Image (tube, rainbow, N blue to C red; front, side, top):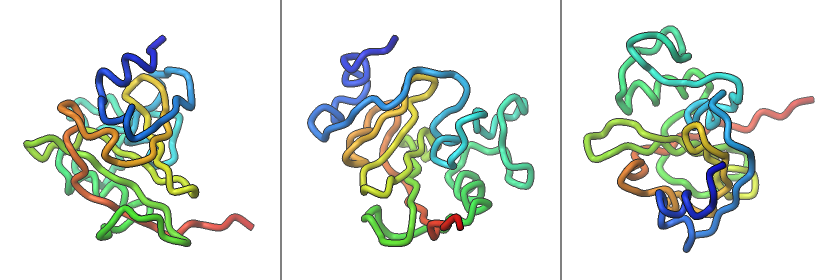
Length: 150
């Protein structure tokens, strides 16, 4: 079991920004899937086709490919990560080579939720909490209208 100490070692900004562990570890899904609302499969544009990736989207580890994957879910690029009434947002992180590394989804509360690889899901106060050597920084924010289920 991963501990809060391990998480804070990997992401030192989390301890000062605030976060909580919200699920047990699982290899079933990753952050890209979790941000897309999928907790059953691992999303990644791997060239060996071992992971799920939307079929019409290039299997390329580029910000553009990740944007296209979320656009299939009605997301579109937007200018900020502020809580916006009627919308849900996703943040895509990328390293210094502009290779996507992580995605986080905004909750109705304005907090963010992330899946840390095959580890736990966490709820974090800010996007800055996950800025790190391994995840890099936020490259793009997307939003979509919240669908109301009747």
